[in-house]
Image (cartoon, rainbow, N blue to C red):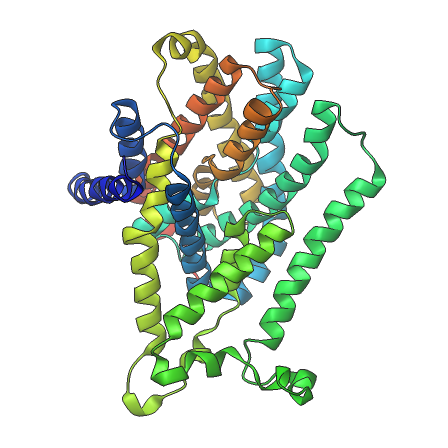
Length: 417
């Protein structure tokens, strides 16, 4: 099948999924995942997606995360980090311990259990944020808490991947130098983002404005080119470049895209008042359309294609998958929810929303599974399918639990300004 034909089929499923989401009042993300799984298992989509579709899907998650960061206020984000350290810590330790213990009891292999614990640690923040967006909850304090704690979790999980995979494969020993290198990469990446935000974006570049050429550059001038005609192109280019910077430092590109959106302010679009046009609102609408209507959904449909049904294997691992799902479901909600309440001092409605929002498992989980199962053969087929099925059930739980909670307590969940 031609790559463009595959994309056309995915877009058709996105159209149907969006219609069904409107009719059923369920978030469209759930339907995207469903159609991806359905089409790959009935043979309409290939089990191994072509590079074009994989790259298109990755571009989708980059634009989604940029759009979410673009909507967020950087001051709220920084303030939220101080508030969400406990959510990140306890919300990661609990699922790691549950998955590790379960894997040891199921298969008795310490290295495989280590990879299972690691795969189930990081939250699929993109799935949660899109679910919150579709329900009008993405501007709540709880959403910011989920995003910041999930970013911290992802950074810690990526560090653990770099440390634990070589240990599990026997290729390396745990050393202080290796740990310091990973910490140094994290610090360097965020320092680079802060530098970009402090130099390229503001109207005045401080001491840097006296440097030839560099001092004359700022985002406001770039956005104002041709009366704002190239503003969207400039924004998407920044999103992709910072995503690539994150990837170069060993992090998921989506983290970089979110940070890029976070350090862009509304004031940068106030460059041509004579037209009486809200350039910021126009940019937001165009970015959101790409992120949530036609490019971003490809990521979720493609994610759904990861679950290939092999009846014999699935039936054999179903008891383990259900037990692991139940353990992670309650363990994640309780650990993140209680941490949000007692370390972050969120109200109970927001705390439980944070617990529900931390349930998803996607990008990093599949990265760890691919490393452990495909690259290094640490994980058995049974363990791989168990984690895949568990992750799928957890992902379905995100929009369902958030939707259920919204109907009861949305009015009690404070919103950010």
